[in-house]
Length: 362
Image (cartoon, rainbow, N blue to C red; front, side, top):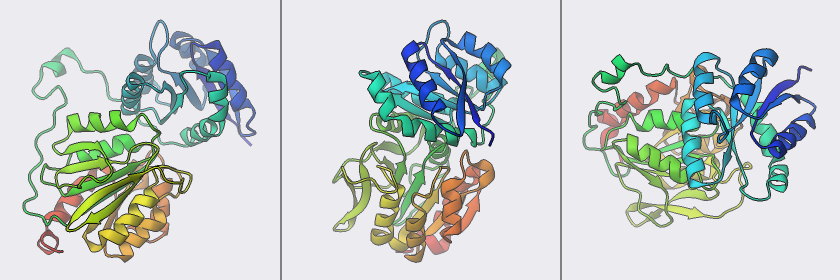
């Protein structure tokens, strides 16, 4: 069996040693090299041609973000970031995912040795997923000419309004590995008068606040973490807080967020299954489901329950997924009404919401 070849890049000798030990304990992977900074890593990658690298964010000479940006433009490959569980660490991690990192591991601020050992299963799972991920080349850095051009800052043109839509409508999105950028693609292409949107993205505590803030700065809709008991409003998107379960409930005529510290479901908290199951029960035929890139089968059965309750479901196609696991399972469960490339999902949602048959359907 061909082993997954991993290079570990971290300025801490202790972390390098621990990660190498965790990787080498696995029958299907080996650490073929370690580097204490990106400049050493660059030569090591050329020489060893690894399948995956783990990359620390904060390092001397060249930080991990700068190195990642150059790597994904010149030699795209699967990267798992090793982040710190701080507000700044979370913001930088979101930037790393935007640049093309497949996933990240949040290392503890204290007790690194015991903390990384406790995370060993998560670390090797993320390395395995990264080894099979569809990695894409990062865009070239802007030139002086493109920076001077209109719209060079990356601002998007306003999305045309949908028009009057029943407040009973609700869009429900589930995602995992690769999902942060997929969710951004959809939300930035939805207008301010969209129905309420509820989202579960597999993410640990401490990172969803930065994720929501980043999206809120880019979208015409308002984006925030879900708060228990808060009304779910049109023109707003609500993201499941990391480490919490998120459901949709009702209070009279209104949808409300139900956020609690529940049990793991399908090994996840938040779990797509939990959110989709509540939508099937509470929203029924007024729901629009969206299953995006991710490993595993979380949410597939519940998405079929949504369809059986009358929802209309979109599933991301294999070619545009970083990891096709969750979308594949949703398709196999018969949950998909349409299987589309990522860039086609937001326009298809708008078209469906704008159609004469769907606009006022309650």
